[in-house]
Image (cartoon, rainbow, N blue to C red):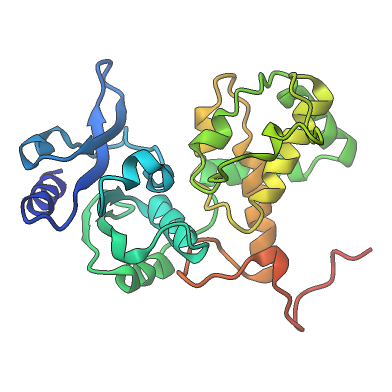
Length: 267
């Protein structure tokens, strides 16, 4: 997309940013993250249907933050992730320049965070349609059928934690699975430990998942783990009328209480 290339070049030339985080074509033709620090290198940037990774995951990496102010090519899921990271004080709006891309694949002129918030509010924030269909199928199952489905899916987990590494909201410097005093989650991959890990991660993302699906795409054994967090995203909207990543001043869904909160979940 020429608009992204020209804008990235302009930002680097006038030193408004010190690095552009975007997409480039890898050696096999697949899109991969690109980190551009020189105006002359901006021609490598691309944007097309191959560019699906959530680049917001790099905003909290010290290797990227050390460059200085960051320009980032941002689709709707990336914009929502940035909003969540700002609301949780992991990044600051003044340190980020947005090179927006609309859901139709067109360049967006995002002047500041308020403009980005306005754009997000106008978009459909529900889960992707294909995932909605799968979730609808799962929600029709009995409790035992659901348990059997997830036990079967999660039995192939090898505990590589690619799902965690791909998620912008999994930014803890030390994860609970890396604590061994006490040992919260078994280190080895087994049915019990796998279930514990994925349930723990889903609960940590309740009200925070922006439904990008990156965790499911990153899984080397094709576990649809993104469906767990997307289901909770649906529940957060159903019970609390909240979609993650819509404001830079979002409160935590699970630690904020309002007198008019629904109580239909209480048995």
